[in-house]
Length: 121
Image 1 (cartoon, helix red, strand yellow):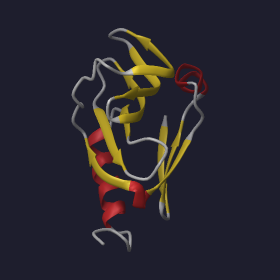
Image 2 (cartoon, one colour):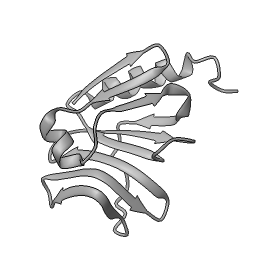
Image 3 (cartoon, helix red, strand yellow):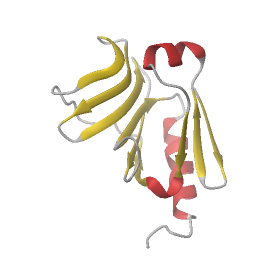
């Protein structure tokens, strides 16, 4: 998975294996739909249903998951730090990913989000 910020959009490019497991192509997320970013593991929601997705316990959770709070996109693998992006007015209410440099990406995304003209409005 590769992340890039260009102008007002966060691009999340999945590799072929990630696309296969997540049943989803790459994501292009307008920064003004992001409400919060963190590098903290989200709480477990045992009521989530894959729709579609892949889950191999303790190894990978990938794809679209629907729970009490709405739709989430996951691509999380064992032993990697989390990057959680909360959203409003978009296809998902949250993106949950794992990246080796999640902390630095959380800071970069938050800085880019805060720099948007509509941030804080």
